Length: 127
Image 1 (cartoon, rainbow, N blue to C red):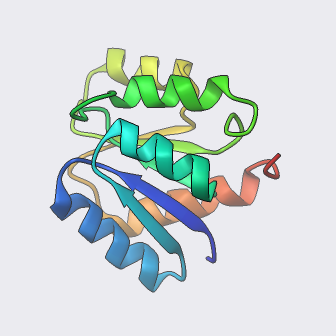
Image 2 (image 1 turned 90 degrees about the vertical axis):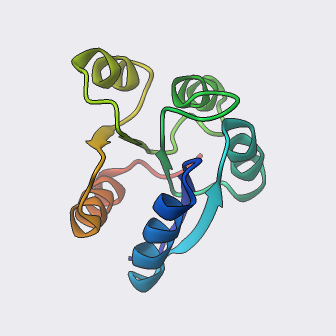
């Protein structure tokens, strides 16, 4: 899999784990620890996919998802929410705001990679 991924999580252990596995799978990986930082990276790098935590220190994941979907240049980037929130309300809101998948923590890295590959294979071309 050769793609550019953005992992957004304020827990360094999570982004380090994702970076390790995604890099081994051939991906170029950027990480962000806040919603604002994620939006800055997306504006500069236009990743092929965003892995997005919901609980972030400034703009939460819902807000980031909504902002990305509202702009024509980022509206088609696949977003996967990766969160410890396990409620149906959180899942439903994330999907309503435009995320394509919702993975709960703790997660198995191999499963995350498989789901990313499936999403990228079926993702529309970037604008």
